[in-house]
Image (cartoon, rainbow, N blue to C red; front, side, top):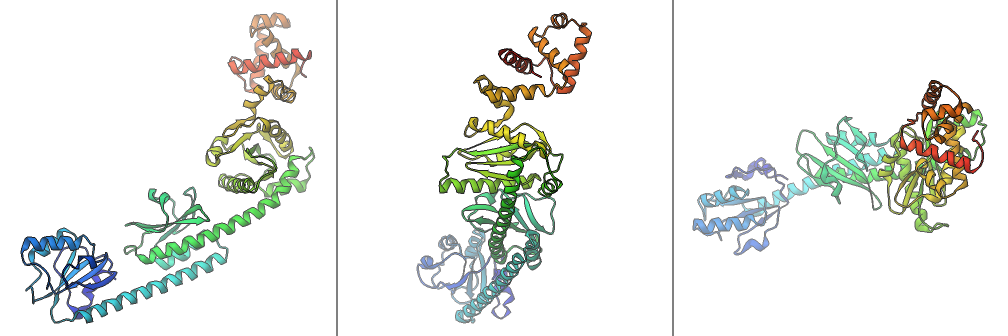
Length: 497
């Protein structure tokens, strides 16, 4: 019940004497006509008094009102005329300065009758609040039972409150809103909330699944000021939203597990792909001509996994699926011992995914870029070569890892390095030209003399190499790789074909 509602109780003739807002809520009514009543005043109370214990000295009266205001009642009503002909000017000024609403009441109205009337109104409002709150709770529960999603939950709540309702996810993304909104920014204070909070322009309640923050409910707009009903509605909505999230995660997990076996069959597949396999992969988001990297998140924990490590792997897989879903990437995962293998389209940046999912005790590695279902197996071989070299807390690319492995004498890395380098130059003639250019110290004239071709012919061939590979043959890193390749071929006493 707001202070302003006192003016609607015409039988009691409340007369405001201060220019203070009457939007504050009355929690209860108390009569203070005893000495030293300060210890009995509580925040939010409306105080009724005859002024019997009030001092008559203006300065003492000002101090008296300040002491009352410190207890944070919402207002004070003085019965007149009797001990005071009207609300004392000194007391009125001090009440206004302290933001304390002050009223005059007719002396003949018994405080008992007035207290009973206000308490009945408070109880009536509380009952109405509980009834509407229960209606909202039932409506939200029915909506979530239909599995209609966050958009329907937002619509149901919005129509009952006549306000804008937004469900936001853990990354502040909009899961559902009514009316639909194009521009939404989560308030900064939302990240530190323990429960629902009412601010001047919005109500925000955190959505929690267990001890994990999964998102927020935001209620804003509408014609009138936000009230306790909006707070209760946000609390109900946060519980129902948590159930919706748990349900969606369960469905996602079930779908993912059905896809695990299929994805694992792709990792070990031979070159042949049936039309059925291609069609099923497309339904899971893997188009036949998709250019992609395979990624692997590795948890640096002993194998076999402990119960805690197993839960950590499941949590990582769930978070990874959510991240891939937001990117519009295929949600194809394979959980193997202490690592999780997944598909990342070439358009998506590995670094951004690592920033989002980086956690203690984990590392991530990415294969080279491949194209199509037939090359999934080759990409998986990249990951298998990388796994022993992944370092905790770091992101690794195949290309960056392969040279250290070559220098350490890894035979498989040498073969992969040479294969990757020379498959970019399909013609043997151009391969010979590049190797001669390297072994002649990258001198054009020496190379042309060694190959017994005109220098312009050499330039043309080297331009063809650059066109086919995208290499800048003046780049020191490219030259280093080519020198290393030349050394490895000489070491093996053979020419790469």
